[in-house]
Amino acid sequence: MDHLCDDVIDEILKHCSYRTTASLLSTTKRLYHHANKVEKMKQRRQLSSQLLKATTKTRSYYKSEILDLKVGDRVTDTIFNYRVHDIGRREGQLQIVDMLGQPLDTMFMYTTIYTVPRGKIKPSSFWSILIFDDDCTIINQLVYGVMKHDDGPLIDSVDCIYLDYITKPKNESHDPELNMMVLVSFKNQQYEYVITHLGDTQLIMTMINPSDNIDIKSTLTVNKTPYHWEIKNRKYKLIRFGGWKNHHYRQLEKKIDA
Image (cartoon, rainbow, N blue to C red):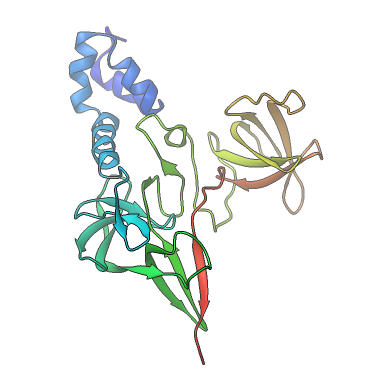
C-alpha cells in the first residue's frame, strides 16, 4: 500500500474496519502520517476520548453506591447516549449526543436519584430518567457507557466488534444487508452472526465469535419465504437482522396512583 496514491488508499480504507484501518496505517512511516487525514482515524481518537469519560465512578448515598456523576461524563440508559451537562447532589441535566459526543438535540433530559421502596430491589437508590407514559412511570437506570447509536450496542473499546458490522436499533425491524450482524437462537442460547453473502432469495451468514459448542454450525443458510426470512436448519431461530446479544440494564414501571 505504501506505493499507492492517497486517493486509492482512501478508497481501500473506506471498506476496512476501524481495527484494520489502524493496523494498515501503522505499517510504514508514510501511512502513519497519512492517518491524520483519514476520517476513521479521527473518529477513533474521538471515541477513545469519549470512552475515558465513561469510566465508572461511584459515591456513597445513604446505604447505596450510586454513580458519581460529573459534568462531561458519558452515560446511557441503553436507549440514548447522554453527556452530563449539569449535576447537583440529587438532580441534573443530560444532553442527548451521538457515539462521538456530538449533540443530537438542543433538548435536555432530566435525571434524578430514584429511591426504591425498602426491600424491593438492590441497590435501593440509583440515578435514573423518569418517563411518564399513560398510567405508569417508566424508570430507566443510568449506567456509565457509550452506545454505537440510539438503542444500540454498548462500545467498550475502540476495537469493539460492533464497530465492524452493521447494527440497527432494537425496537425496529430491518431488511438484511451485507456485513450486517444477525442475532440467532440455538437451544435457548443467543449467538451473533454476520451476513457474508446476500442474494434476492437466499443469504449466508457466518458466526462472528466461534463457539466451544461443537453442535452449533459456524455457517448458516437463510431462505426468503413469501412472508419472512427463515434459517434452513429449523433448529435455529432468526431473532433479528441488525441484532446483537442483549445488555442487562434496569427498567422499572411504577403505577401512578389514581
